[in-house]
Image 1 (cartoon, rainbow, N blue to C red):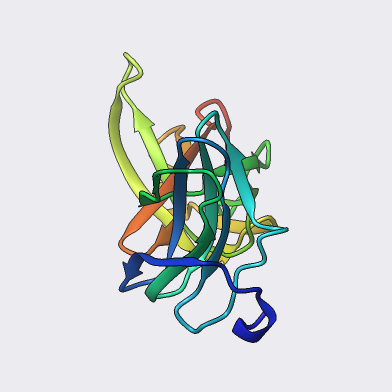
Image 2: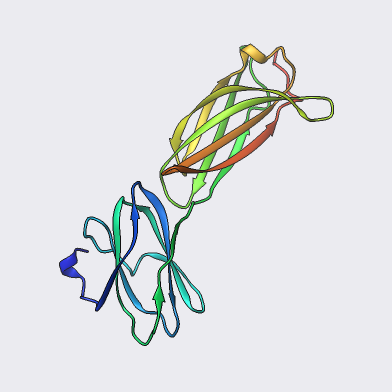
Amino acid sequence: MTASDNPTLPESRDIFTLYDTYNMTVVVVFDEEPPIVQFIAPDGTYVDMENIRYRPGSNFIQYFLPNAMPGVWRMNYDPLSNTEITAPYSVYMEHIFIRNFEAAAQWDENGNIPVSFEVSADNDGEFVYVLHAVFTAPDNSIASEIVLTGGSGSLNEAHDLVVDTQTIQNMGGFMLRLTASVRHGQASVKDSAWLDLRLNAISD
């Protein structure tokens, strides 16, 4: 929707200014009834208020603006019967979850282990990951860990790796720790998952 498509509302105010792309939440707080609001991006486009994700409360509505572009964001609104309307805002982080983290029951004579996993989130995008081999002491505390591999991928898609463990196959059994993260501006959200391979052995 463009500015010319949107009906004019009587009040207008700046609600926040961004210097990088973030997921933003705006809480419109009122004292009588939910006002009519319209968010305007820095490039002048109007947010589709019919499809925006929101969460209503007794005297507020929380609106979610994913991947909000840098610049000055505005809100046009009709206060209706309200005597006071505020619009505090903050960055929010979408949670990510590592799912279906699996490895072969045994690795081959070359120390290769097929590994698969998926990193799921509400929205599509990119993530980065690091896979560690973690060695434990007899009391199960972490004795040491080694980075096996790392990279990036697309959220909500299955990923298959062949991990080379040849350099550590004589160090005994170990656990795999997978850490995935998604960056939002200067902040990031992470998830980790573990696989216990301490009883596995190299096949003959």
